[in-house]
Image (cartoon, rainbow, N blue to C red; front, side, top):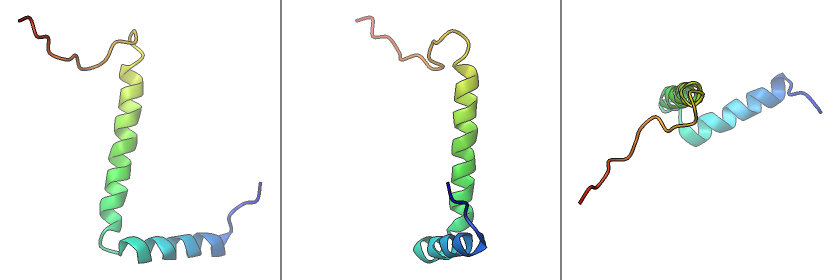
Length: 61
């Protein structure tokens, strides 16, 4: 599998800046970081027996 060099990474970064704009990059990074953190937290809490972390409310009517 070929590795990415400096020129390829620079080109990808340039395309991302053009598509999203320099002002939105911090927001995208923050959102991506929060998503990864929530995913890891969900994996850790899912190891306690397979039950969902939040239960749906029951309708006893």
